[in-house]
Image 1 (spheres, rainbow, N blue to C red):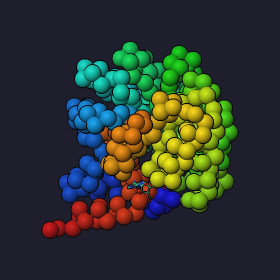
Image 2 (cartoon, rainbow, N blue to C red):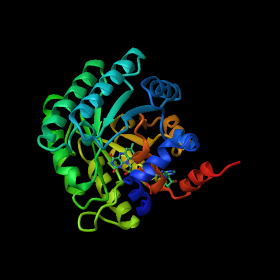
Image 3 (cartoon, rainbow, N blue to C red):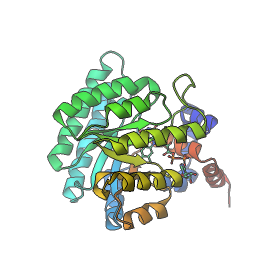
Image 4 (cartoon, helix red, strand yellow):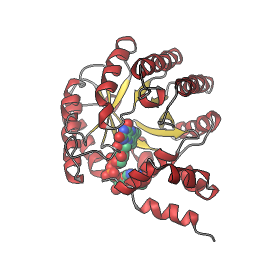
Length: 308
Ligand code: FDA
């Protein structure tokens, strides 16, 4: 399970200042983050396409506190989509976004702003032949995110969403979203959640992932299986064989910089493999969540602060 102290540090402003400003951390950050500018992430997407990997690109940033900031995020997504189109990558590169980054947590009509701005991104994605998947944030946001998904899908049927196996509600959400045309990315869940709403032991989360995976793989939608866990990857391939799902009817997803050999192995075996490619200046919280998932990553960070 993610390390709770590191998850707390992901929210801590002093830690953010220390880690973000240190030039020493650049190397390790670059392992997980594709760069700060459009041209850098497009170059990485092109390199990955060259070795048979598709991508979903995420503009980092989740602490949006003003409408202008949310609109700037929308504009950056629009520019990115046109850059992907210009680079002839739009068919294999989609974008991932967080509702909070597009204004979802603003006071007043945050939901309305997020709906309007996300719709603009979906329209641009449709115009260039790409698509959008909505990330899932902590459990307090799930209802609003799924309502937003429903509204967007009426206009843009291929918009996808992430569901987190750690949440007690997720099996029911999977059942509701396992219909034809639906795209669901199943993840374990990266947020520290209370036991009242979430399974907190790793074993329980893994069991729940299997249960949700089965629902999605037996359903009519398009499952996006987002895990680095070797047992769950094998189990996915087993369920696909069992249910006669072809390699075009589901895909694997992994994070940039994690288990890269496995990404290449799955792709060269004929599977669809999509890499979640984050970029942007606001990389701190994302980076800390990756450290929290694998405490040995912390050694890499500690070493980057050690001279010599
Ligand atoms: P688990 O954490 O058990 O890891 C299995 C193995 O993978 C580890 O033993 C290790 O070898 C390797 N590994 C995993 N994480 C690593 C790391 N950080 N560094 C090095 N090795 C690592 N979460 C969320 O709450 N909302 C979301 O929208 C998304 N979106 C999303 C998209 C995609 C494409 C992926 C792959 C993941 C997410 N996540 C997410 C994150 C997800 O919830 C989860 O925290 C991570 O994927 C880690 O869980 P695993 O399933 O890999 O299993």
